[in-house]
Image (tube, rainbow, N blue to C red):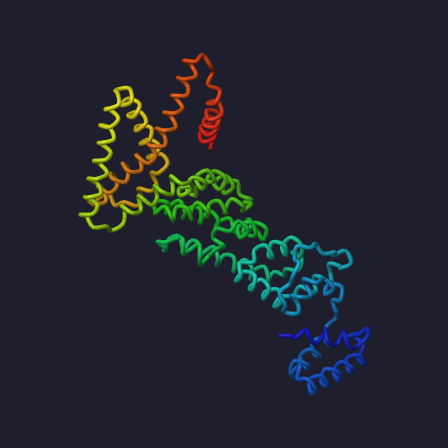
Length: 392
């Protein structure tokens, strides 16, 4: 590979260096060999390869190499400030076309380094501003690397029991910029890959909550792929509500607590410990009813309604957590019942307090002949949330 730092050295030391001028070539050769002897900066082989290269060049590409990003890549340096749009007005298409072939090995190296280091934003900038510098060979190389990354995601979802490791080792799997880049490069080319990832996610959704969260993040990231195919576009769009639901399985104090309760009971625990805890939890749950009935029958009715609501909410919001259990295992079944009761009590207690205080406030306001205005805001919030959930 040509060492283009030699050209920089020549340009700095020979004023108006012209590679088409034989006298300038002689000056450059003497200068470089002298520098090699004095400082060992360049090897003789590098000098000869460089001189042979510039002698055979029909273009010196000065206009193109004035572009800092292209110049850096050309000199085997990773470019900076890719987000600045270049001025290409003084560069002809014929010059760019000729340069593309020379640029192939350098562009491949830039792409390789960027992909290896997950520099998707830099590749997006390059795709936006310098797409005309891709040759057919460079693009083929580029698409193969991206296909390989997609294959890693697909294989990882199929084979990996712990998708948090997939996310850690292949962070691009949940990176929206990775998928957006593919639609910039060629949305038709990667359409099949994106659909395959989506289908594999759907096929492996019966998994642990931690895995479910990662699958939701993958579906959310895929949304940023701008598909040309209407079928793919609709599938991606429809999956967003599901993705948000999966991602939120551990979001919030109650959800996180419910997750850890379910995870505890789903572990390979000692059957004796599970039995003991189940007896304690069931006993406390039954005693809570005796405690409420000791107050009065109206309180028992209220408590019963609250528990039914709590069980419904637990089933609706925490049902994914119970995918952790093996229903064919008696200990797991007992653990699931105990976890459900415990989660119900945890959800039901604050719900009972909120509803109880709310009803007490309404009754007190009504008995005093006042309108319970303080309850309007909570009712509006609850109504909006119900409406949004129905329209997801």
